[in-house]
Amino acid sequence: MLDAENLFDNTLYIDSLSFSRGGKNIITNLYLTCGPNEVVGIVGRNGSGKSTLMNIIFGQTKPDFAFMRCNGVKFEKGYQTKEIVYLPQGGFLPRELLLSEAFRFFEIDDPDLLELPFIQQNFKNRLSSLSLGMIRFFETLLILHTKHSFSLLDEPFIGLSPIYIDLIKEHIQLVKHRKGILISDHYFRQVMDISDRLYLLKDSRLIQVFSEDDLVFGGYLNHID
Image (cartoon, rainbow, N blue to C red; front, side):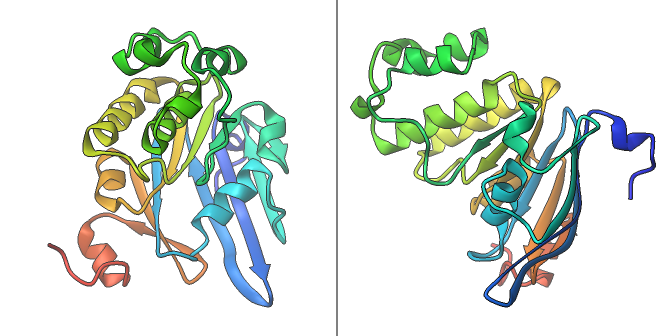
């Protein structure tokens, strides 16, 4: 547990989080922190509870119990804090939306994003004119570049080409100086590359990971290539 002083700093603090469904424990007594300027990665097999965890933090799923603080303020639904923003697995922007309208809605004026060739070329286009991979790329960039203190990224690399994955990783490093990032993805090596701390969610609990050997030992990988 963090000491009393640290409970009121600029950390995303999750303690004693538990969630069950149909009599099965999905998450049990979970403890997790994510500080500013920090990338915390979570890996795990399908159904292990990664998306459930993010949905609970953001406020779309109600836990059985959780003690959560953001920047020293206790919360039950992360979106109500105005400090936490979330990239869900299934996407979230209406397809008829112009990219320029999305920038205005999220109040994004970051030149690192606005000057990206992809953005300049599509700034006045609707999302419906983009491929699914390009939409995912754009949505991930938006969530990274908001002014929120914490960005939750659930499967940001899904459907992306290697060049877009590398660009997302670059932008994570660009914004890391001003926010904390919680990321989960099946591209575990990409998550390992960018994470300051990495965890495996298995059997309803988090296990800290220090190397790929830990993922083999934890049963997430059969072997190391």
